[in-house]
Image (cartoon, rainbow, N blue to C red; front, side, top):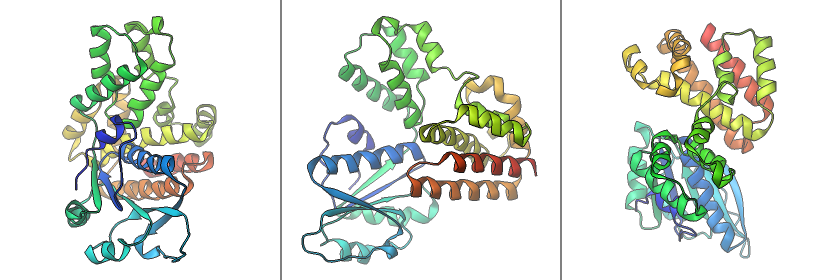
Amino acid sequence: MRLDPLNLVLTKDYKVEKRFYFISGNEKTFIDRIKAIIIENYQKKERVTLSNIASINDYVDTGLLFEEKKIILINDSKEINEGVLDSLRDTNNVYIFSQENSQKIKKIKNIFLKDRDSFLIDCYELNRVSKIKILNEFIKLSKLKINEDIYWFLVEKLDNKYAFLESSLNKILSLDEENITLFNLKRLLTIDSSGKEKVFFGLNKTNREIVEIYRNKIVTTSDVNEFYFYCKSFCQLVIDSKNKEDYYKKIPVYLFKEKNFLIDFYAKYNSEKKKMLLRLLSSTEKVLRKESGLSLVSGLRFLLTLKKITTS
């Protein structure tokens, strides 16, 4: 059965009572948020323990009669088939599979789509309609009063990536209502030179300078996660572009000041270096999942490796 991820985001205490969840799509921050919502909904009802495994082959059923319910988080779905789901169906556990889209998982997604005990949840970048729904619910719950100009400014300006949109809404919520003006929101939501994403735009500097900038900007685990997702979005832009013309069209308008840097960044990547970039993102994702957030050291290691690949 297919489930719209917005139903989980917009419906308080959404009833989730399936044995299996398969969360996929091309928007990692949205995938992570949906996974967190599902877990939170179970934790509100009963005591559960979380267990992370790489693939379902690593799962071991202890068979203890009075054992607490477990939520098993699986990061690789390649071993899944109908028989595997049937073997897990009578356990007391909940299984959450999460994997970004690829050609290899089309058949697997179809298994979950047809299975009666499953939800298939596809998470893609938010479009205008999705942002309007989220913004309307935010205004309703927060009881904010905003004028029409501010409303449509937010619809246009809020990020298409869920984590960044949610972060922006939380920033707005921290303002006193009289300070929610178009001028203040433009300052608040426009990426400026002091942002964490600017660490990425320092890749042309020396390693010593990069380390200094990183240490000044990235202080907490939350900072590392935000910084990483910015870097990933810039890298993904390079990987997904068929040619330089296609790449130029995809550069976000708000990055006009960094356009020359981004064009130069793209020019340094051939097909082999794109593969290296993919491997770096993949290995970093594993650290992210394993540690439930990148450590400061891991974030810096990622940045310096990215520079090495780019300038090699």
